[in-house]
Each structure stands twice: as structure tokens, then as C-alpha cells.
Image (tube, rainbow, N blue to C red; front, side):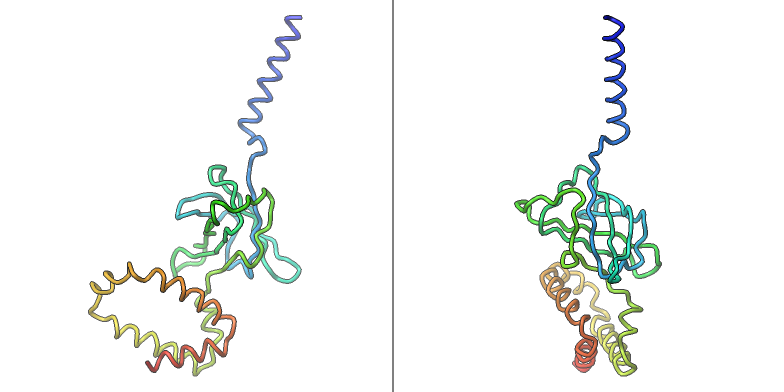
Length: 201
């Protein structure tokens, strides 16, 4: 009898160790569907609020050319809630392998997103690559972009301190501007016209 009890204790201990060291099945994964993977690769970092929060586990291309990106989220950040967005960003304009997924949390009162769920394309966004952006333009629009950038450079020349002081007031404007450029980027003609008009201001 004592031998049976001892054997049972050993088995229970082995199961406990397996649960502790093999994860116990409490990993949390969601799949985010992006228009394109924007040079994201397996193993890239996932962040929440600028803090490392997980990794890219897998990337699969759908039949219609979208990218299904499976991301693993650390338990302390789970569960995600309805309204959460996933955005592929780049750490800098230089380099290729510098992408990460930025998870922008939804309302804390939103319904929980189950493990294994899909974040649809309307809940994701992808950073615009500069070369892709310029490839949209015809020669006239490219000249307009150059004029626009040169005009911006001249406008802020020698005003670094004023610019730094003003940036704290820009967040609402930048948020609105981000939405504007996402819409403009869907229409090549409209975007080109916007830049041409802006270069003459």
C-alpha cells in the first residue's frame, strides 16, 4: 500500500514538473491578417506600449495574397480585447530586418479575444515603404514630392527649438494626418494631386 502511494506521489510530481516546464498549454496566439507582411519575418518582436510582449510565430500567404501573421503574446498581456489593432512598424528608415508588430490595445471593457482568433484586415495596418510610395508616382508627381520636401526643409531651417516646443501639441494632428494619408494612399491620382498642390503653398 505504501509502495502504491509512493508511486502515485512520483507520478503526480512528474505531471506537475511537466506542466511547469512545458508550458501547460497556456500560450496565447492570435493571427493578424495584413494587406502585406512588409518584410516582417518569423521571430520578429511584438510590442505593446513600446514593451516587448511576444514574437511572430508564423507567416502564411492567403489565397488572395494577404499575409496571415501568427503572433504569440506573453501571458501577462492577455487576453486581448475587441478593438485591438496590430500594426507592422519599422524601427528606423534604414535597414531591412527592422520590422516589429505594434499591438494597440482596445477598450478595457471590450469583449475578450479568444486564443487562436483572427484579427481581420480592418484591425491591422502596415507601415508604408518609401520605395513603394515613390513607385506610385509619375515623373511630375516625383518632382512635386521633391519640391514639397525641399519647401519643408527651408520652412523649419533654424527653428529647431521652436519645433521641439511645438511637437507636444502635434499628437491629435498627427493622428488625424495618419488617417488622411492612409486614405490618400489608396488613390494614386488623389495622392499625387495632393502633393502637387502642397508643393505650391
